Amino acid sequence: MFTLLQTAQPAAQGGGWSMWIMLALIFVVMWIFMIRPQRKQQKELQNFRDSLKKGDKVVTIGGIYGTVCEIKDESVLVEVDNNVKIRVSKQALVKDFTDPTRQ
Image (tube, rainbow, N blue to C red; front, top):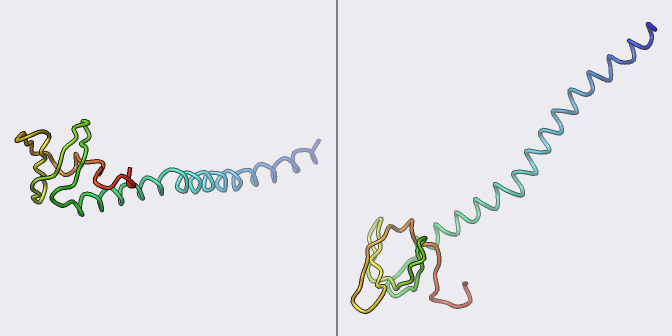
């Protein structure tokens, strides 16, 4: 009976290290498959917003399609119909339809 207790203790100690290794592996997998692609997408979206120019055809988060008329630091004037213009935040622009290959 005494030898049975001695063999059970090393298994419990080894289980602690394996738990930490598994937690680290889970974090690495989450970073590779979730955090990294999201950061890449955010970087591409920021590059799109920084490279806006007059005449680009864009869509907003709300689904409004229009053409860029004027660009300021934090906002963009978008023409949505003949002589109908709205001012939206740059953060509200999500897609560029100027070049059909970029869709």
